[in-house]
Length: 323
Length: 248
Image (cartoon, rainbow over all chains, first blue to last red; front, side):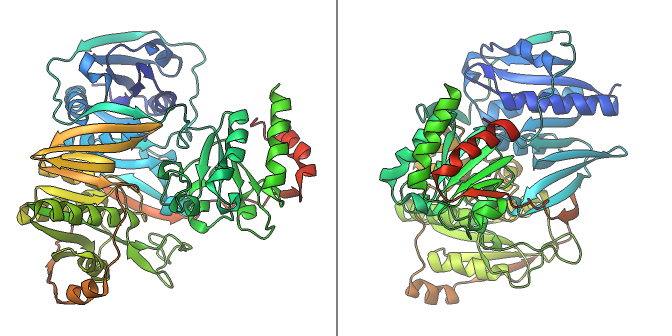
């Protein structure tokens, strides 16, 4: 029997997420290298962009459908995926390590008696073995691991693997499987959205404020720059602990680990636990009065000046550029 | 009600990590270890739940003798008793989940709290693995928790919002920052903790599912350029971001 890879995709509001295309590109890469075929699974009600799947991966897509599965249910998702993967004999499973992926994947690995490496940032082949690299201590070090189990599950850190497109779109092979009586013993009843707010975990650009912002009343300076850039607003631990910003904005070891294309740190000195959470950003800009601040050791570009003077000018210049 | 809380003993987040001579673990010299920050929220929620509904709370921790210090910290916060699941090996998440599940079964706990991840290996999977092995429900990354009869409702953090999740006991809850404000151990608590019982159980060797090959340091970034000391550097910054970095 041909060996098979399973790519688990995630939909939100009936749309497959960008991080799932990264997952598909990884599945495609290993399918080519190892001579395996790919099945992909998405669970939900109506899904509008299923056809995009085939721009990233030549696969069979199975859409498990039920109106009640529009929102996530860990019990139902687990049962569907474990039964499907067991029946098809998938040996390698990829999923993006999003909030949903993190919650779901340990459940699946127990159900399939599979090993799991979570939050991978690199996957390399050594002969037939996949060597997975994952950040530990919030990125202060990296760990290389290998799974000894027969079925292997890898969750991939979002925004790290490139969603490489196929040269030509693959044939669309989609089957819809209606799910009867899903197990909703553990389910999301509703989602409370932070209205109009971009999450630091998903943003391509982040503008973060630290103690140098001097108080919550000055955060509009940060927000104005973020708005011009279409960026999320982040915060240091000091600022969150002081109650200036909500904890979901915190970047660092006890907050979120982020790797956006651009991270702008304003009035952040760069405590080691903060650097751990953001130093894998592709480009880092630091604006801080103290030119000896550790943040400048990781910044690509810095302005050692007063953010109250620099930020309004920066916001204005970006506005001109975009205009 | 029987409540269990699982904690780990981890390097303080201010630690500068150095890799040990075996290239498979960090050099513990000069590192100060603490109760895992997310586990503090778990201990607090376990104590609050006990205060509301009665019962007792047992703290479990897996590791070498040094984890007793962290067990004492939880006892000082108000946990009733401790179990030290002793192993000097570096166990993977699957082995840890297995010993926790076995011990939770022994204690008869139907509600289990733990941090959403430990800030050393950052796997973030032990909570759900343990729940699955026990055949318990579980909700991960919780910022609120409510128990009504056997119905559990919790809010969990997701990208750009929160999910309100409903399930029932028995259940494992993993704690995220924001769940509560952990209490400080009082002097009285610290004194009483010294008299509380910590049961030690020696663990047999475990199978290795996730083989640790080596640890590496990330490639250090070259320090960049300081472009100036005031807003006169802004045009150059914008030009570099646009033309060199191509990120705006």
